[in-house]
Length: 339
Image (tube, rainbow, N blue to C red):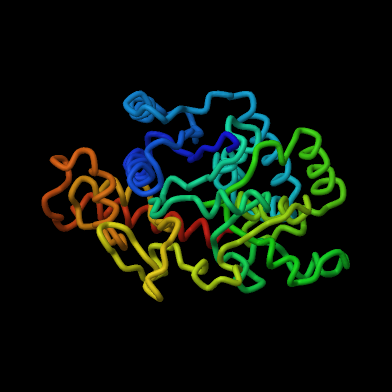
């Protein structure tokens, strides 16, 4: 079999989530598949300690490649019409480092699966690996069902080109929190072609202005435009493949600390704790009763190898924690208003 591995993106800020993900992969996927952590930024002291404590985990260290992908993403976002409209500083929104996940396409594995750091793996990846024999991209999300105003791509604008129908466009919309793919699909030459189309030919306007800073929105454009075979389990003709994955939206059933889709007890690839902050998980791991769906499952995997450190019971959120959460919520509301 081709060299296969797993990627994720992390730094010390999301250390609790990283440990939980690594433990869930070892328990539910395989203890032998190599894992490469792409650094979100240079805050990596705890991450390095964790890497050194595990036999099959390494830290991605090609900083030139990371920088090249970041420059590409920033050039694209700077060309988007929303850049001129927004009242916020660019650095407030899209000068994050989520786009670093794309270095996987020039990374160390021939074939790979990427997990967002705020996820827990729930089953082996055999079916993803099998699909990669036929498809170049494999996803498992419901981005394609979103209403036009909040979808990844601007369907109306793309339809006007006559190149794609709405069905074509929707089948290529996906998120970037979990995907399987292959090394070498986006070469330096291909990225230059994509950049030319986006900036010079103004195809950046194909990316919905609602999420113009979102790396997954750009990723949907890239997979649509490169015209390579793509498979999404949520569009599978086999109903067993179609499950939920979001902690704050989908109902799951816990069987021996493995979660299954409530409807039909179908196995899920992962649970994604989207919309919860790293601070929420820090409070939870300190024993504070934060409102996180499937918190017990998260704690199980976070302290799987250190059960003695797991909080024995959860106490009410402290006044300081409540104040911090309220402050962050207020700031986010102000930013959304200015956007």
